[in-house]
Image (tube, rainbow, N blue to C red):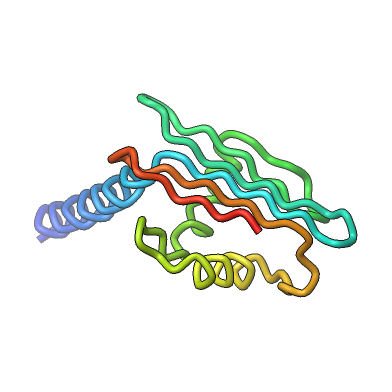
Length: 126
Protein backbone atom coordinates (compact mmCIF):
# COMPACT_ATOMS: atom_id res chain seq x y z
CA UNK A 1 0.00 0.00 0.00
CA UNK A 2 2.79 2.44 0.92
CA UNK A 3 4.63 1.62 -2.31
CA UNK A 4 1.48 2.28 -4.32
CA UNK A 5 1.04 5.70 -2.66
CA UNK A 6 4.69 6.52 -3.25
CA UNK A 7 4.45 5.64 -6.94
CA UNK A 8 1.26 7.70 -7.32
CA UNK A 9 2.93 10.67 -5.61
CA UNK A 10 5.95 10.44 -7.89
CA UNK A 11 3.72 10.26 -10.97
CA UNK A 12 1.70 13.31 -9.86
CA UNK A 13 4.87 15.28 -9.13
CA UNK A 14 6.39 14.31 -12.48
CA UNK A 15 3.26 15.35 -14.38
CA UNK A 16 3.15 18.75 -12.67
CA UNK A 17 6.84 19.32 -13.31
CA UNK A 18 6.60 18.39 -17.00
CA UNK A 19 3.57 20.66 -17.47
CA UNK A 20 5.36 23.58 -15.83
CA UNK A 21 8.42 23.07 -18.01
CA UNK A 22 6.37 22.75 -21.19
CA UNK A 23 4.41 25.93 -20.41
CA UNK A 24 7.53 27.88 -19.53
CA UNK A 25 9.43 26.69 -22.61
CA UNK A 26 7.06 28.47 -25.02
CA UNK A 27 8.04 31.84 -23.57
CA UNK A 28 11.75 32.60 -23.66
CA UNK A 29 11.84 36.33 -22.96
CA UNK A 30 9.41 38.66 -21.18
CA UNK A 31 10.22 42.33 -20.54
CA UNK A 32 7.66 44.69 -19.05
CA UNK A 33 8.15 48.34 -18.15
CA UNK A 34 5.34 50.49 -16.83
CA UNK A 35 5.93 54.13 -15.98
CA UNK A 36 3.28 55.75 -13.83
CA UNK A 37 2.25 59.40 -13.95
CA UNK A 38 3.67 59.81 -10.42
CA UNK A 39 7.09 58.53 -11.70
CA UNK A 40 6.77 55.09 -10.05
CA UNK A 41 8.10 52.27 -12.25
CA UNK A 42 7.32 48.60 -12.68
CA UNK A 43 10.04 46.51 -14.29
CA UNK A 44 9.52 42.78 -14.68
CA UNK A 45 11.90 40.57 -16.64
CA UNK A 46 12.04 36.83 -17.23
CA UNK A 47 14.50 35.28 -19.66
CA UNK A 48 15.02 31.60 -20.31
CA UNK A 49 18.60 30.80 -21.32
CA UNK A 50 20.03 27.41 -22.32
CA UNK A 51 20.53 26.11 -18.80
CA UNK A 52 19.17 28.86 -16.57
CA UNK A 53 16.50 31.50 -16.05
CA UNK A 54 17.27 35.13 -15.29
CA UNK A 55 14.64 37.34 -13.71
CA UNK A 56 14.06 40.75 -12.18
CA UNK A 57 10.98 41.81 -10.26
CA UNK A 58 10.63 45.50 -9.41
CA UNK A 59 7.36 47.01 -8.30
CA UNK A 60 6.81 50.27 -6.41
CA UNK A 61 6.93 50.04 -2.65
CA UNK A 62 8.88 46.77 -2.58
CA UNK A 63 12.54 45.86 -2.75
CA UNK A 64 13.75 44.89 -6.24
CA UNK A 65 14.57 41.19 -6.35
CA UNK A 66 16.67 39.16 -8.80
CA UNK A 67 17.44 35.52 -9.48
CA UNK A 68 15.43 32.76 -7.81
CA UNK A 69 13.43 35.15 -5.66
CA UNK A 70 12.37 37.06 -8.79
CA UNK A 71 11.59 33.79 -10.61
CA UNK A 72 9.34 32.81 -7.69
CA UNK A 73 7.47 36.12 -8.11
CA UNK A 74 7.32 35.99 -11.91
CA UNK A 75 5.98 32.45 -12.40
CA UNK A 76 2.61 33.06 -10.69
CA UNK A 77 2.36 36.44 -12.42
CA UNK A 78 3.00 34.92 -15.87
CA UNK A 79 0.62 32.07 -15.08
CA UNK A 80 -2.25 34.56 -14.77
CA UNK A 81 -1.71 35.96 -18.26
CA UNK A 82 -2.95 34.63 -21.57
CA UNK A 83 0.32 34.95 -23.43
CA UNK A 84 0.20 33.92 -27.06
CA UNK A 85 1.35 35.33 -30.35
CA UNK A 86 -2.22 36.10 -31.41
CA UNK A 87 -3.48 37.70 -28.20
CA UNK A 88 -5.36 40.98 -28.46
CA UNK A 89 -2.90 43.62 -27.25
CA UNK A 90 -5.48 45.71 -25.39
CA UNK A 91 -6.81 42.61 -23.62
CA UNK A 92 -3.29 41.55 -22.59
CA UNK A 93 -2.39 45.04 -21.41
CA UNK A 94 -5.55 45.18 -19.29
CA UNK A 95 -4.82 41.69 -17.89
CA UNK A 96 -1.34 42.78 -16.83
CA UNK A 97 -2.59 45.97 -15.19
CA UNK A 98 -5.33 44.05 -13.38
CA UNK A 99 -2.91 41.41 -12.05
CA UNK A 100 -0.53 44.15 -10.85
CA UNK A 101 -3.50 46.11 -9.41
CA UNK A 102 -2.63 49.19 -11.45
CA UNK A 103 -5.27 51.72 -12.46
CA UNK A 104 -4.92 52.27 -16.25
CA UNK A 105 -5.67 55.98 -15.73
CA UNK A 106 -2.42 56.34 -13.79
CA UNK A 107 -0.19 54.77 -16.46
CA UNK A 108 2.04 57.14 -18.42
CA UNK A 109 3.93 54.55 -20.51
CA UNK A 110 3.46 50.82 -21.03
CA UNK A 111 6.05 48.76 -22.87
CA UNK A 112 5.97 44.98 -23.24
CA UNK A 113 8.29 42.77 -25.28
CA UNK A 114 7.75 39.02 -25.43
CA UNK A 115 9.73 36.48 -27.41
CA UNK A 116 8.52 32.93 -27.93
CA UNK A 117 10.51 29.76 -28.43
CA UNK A 118 9.72 29.67 -32.17
CA UNK A 119 11.27 33.14 -32.62
CA UNK A 120 7.98 35.03 -32.92
CA UNK A 121 7.63 38.24 -30.97
CA UNK A 122 4.91 40.31 -29.37
CA UNK A 123 5.37 44.01 -28.64
CA UNK A 124 3.11 46.58 -27.03
CA UNK A 125 4.25 50.19 -26.71
CA UNK A 126 1.72 52.74 -25.49
